Image (cartoon, rainbow, N blue to C red; front, side, top):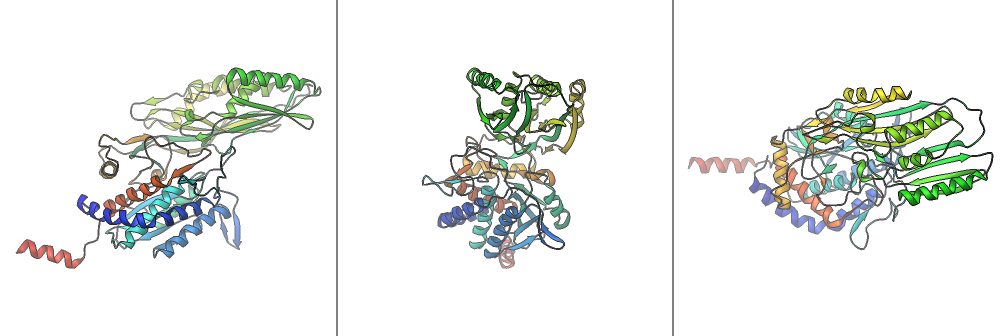
Length: 501
């Protein structure tokens, strides 16, 4: 790793380069954001080849690879599942793991989530500005700047481009199996100063089978909410039918009183022969559900005031409101674990699904680093069994833990303290899941600064141009420190001669 004096010298040259390149850096990020790289169905290219995550994700990938080639870097496309942009020739590798896919935009934005561009106030706006296109592009421009000022890394620097981080993350695993693991590095996909621990993650579904009902009365025809399991849903919708449409007036009045009393947003409107009921919440990252307002919970709280012809539907709604509801710690289901290292478990309901055969919710738990997934499931089963609820396990990612005095953690902490002047800053534990779990020897380093508004997975995502430029600077310093500067053999000989003189 480079010494502090080397970092300071090279950083000064990089600072000047950033000043000259600020417009190009902002425009490149705005262009990347304009590509709506939400994962979609595979697109066939030719026999035996496809874009596994859809055309838009591939377009974002192709754009970054083209920027890399134009800058004179080596690039790699690993079967359209992941790839990299590489700088330097050292035997060891500093890996920076970032991702180009984004979560769905959702509704309620004040500007277009993909084409808003740069505001007159200097805000770079759109889905991915914070998670993770802004940080990814900042690392790229740090690499580009270092190359153009003549920095020669002792370890090669590899910006690894993930394409399905927001869903399965299988693309990175596929890539690492073939390209190999970097020796050390970081992912710019969380917050500053440094994340030395990440809670474990469970994704699962809770569902109840529904029996047919021949009774007449208020019938729940449709029920849905949310776009992704790791997002607090911002909207949810129900469609109800009645053989007596005059009953709709009473339902609308109940909805009005519910909104007035609770302060939650609930709207009703006629839709053909049915009545639509829509709940509006506030989206947030699923790892911090307390920062959002869960629209599914709002809707089901209101539906609990109605009585439907299918008693199984009523029972599911009662179960949800009593044992999940607005709790974000899992206490209703008996799994409110916590520890001194990482704090409390969080529980998010991200999606709601319903048909005539079953009703269910998709859930996301972030659990303390000293716990295990089996403990969580075991704690929930007594309640689930009592209500005849089925549990389908989807994904599990074990916790990540580095000691606070780990050399990598300490090096990145020092970079952060030098950049911000915050000598009291300490490494953190996060509920977020990052690529660091898949790559030993890496931790999350940024990109959200303390005190900045967190718009990740939320509407109106944006980053100030000045903060984006600061990211280029701090990631440049990190790359200098971690990669080190390759010494010219002539300089080494001069140093030896001076010692022997």
